[in-house]
Length: 220
Image (cartoon, rainbow, N blue to C red):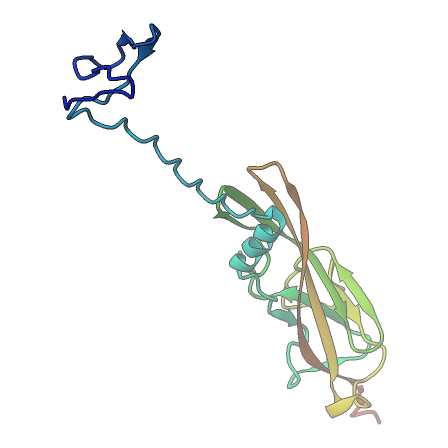
């Protein structure tokens, strides 16, 4: 240790760190001396930066994403008559039904999707169809309809219509039939939120309705 003398001439060089001595005035004094080679005290650890919180995920918005992932489609509708080239008749029953039933057209359809810590499970159920027939009438079908059996003139048991007027006064001589398929998507989530989302998908077709006339021949 280097020689060290205070202002009163006392030599402190023989003291070890933290000991006391008596100065010329009779007072005890303490001397704190860093010994050579003593390492500095370690610096306190720097606090680590806090991780940014994950963005909040709205389960209802995630449910809308689940609906879009299902790719639900408006169904193809068959009927009697089935196209403008086939003539239907005033007073005869017209049947309507879904020609392409399946997961995306009549359900049920299910999916699951996640974002962050939120997971949503969704199931779509087909609820039936609303059909505007083009002659001012509207019919409600509780399901996908019943396919026409191919013979007979009975009315459809669940999705049909009888036209009372010909379509010749309509644009191009055709009735435009608008069909809206109704779905309900039920969803729940792992965070407790749940709900229902209505989905409507529309399509249309055209029908030609005429009048059959009976011609009697061979009467004498």
